[in-house]
Length: 286
Image (cartoon, rainbow, N blue to C red; front, side, top):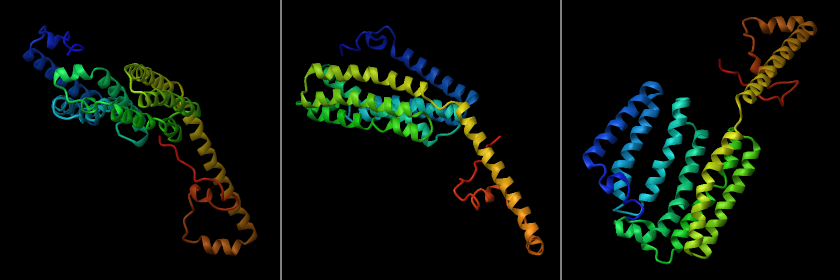
């Protein structure tokens, strides 16, 4: 292939045994480093991604067009790996960036496969665009996956990762790349395919920058925790006042009912009169 023939391995500057030895050494060392310095979950994700890339995705390139979707999974795992290394778990809100990487890769590689379809054919790679002479199916897949990018900003805001500004910016960004994909779908020319490819190159760094700039900071989380603690304190105080008032009005009744009974925790007072609309307080973990 023209686009890869000058790389070290195809050009012969690096031998196959040398490449295998180096890749295996670095892969094992990196996985061990993650296991020791991060956690076993991150190390497991790294090891599985190495196996998926080397032994599934790479051979599939010469077997079936599904290689593009498998490659998208390979590209989506690294940000999930980073989340697991930092938090020690794989949570729902940690799927925003992997989802963005996965859906972004489809229009990105569909544009590339359309632009280089003859080069891929010469190299023996079974890309999706090779069996699609008109390019309609290739453009349709790219457009559909651009639409899948639209709700990611709202989900990031709704799940408490970012502010509302990111919701707006991410939606506009997804609409922009969708417009280039729609243009390619309506008029399947090399120019429109290259425009969609360039839009995909711009999308990812802008999306990540927005996610970073509009993230919900720890100070905001502390404010929410303090507010919850104040609700707990207010609820406890109100419960104490109510109990003392009831004791003054009906001393015999209170005395009778309080024998052998345990005091209700503050959370119980948060959901009863006189303020039934108060939410149950969230206790901050130490």
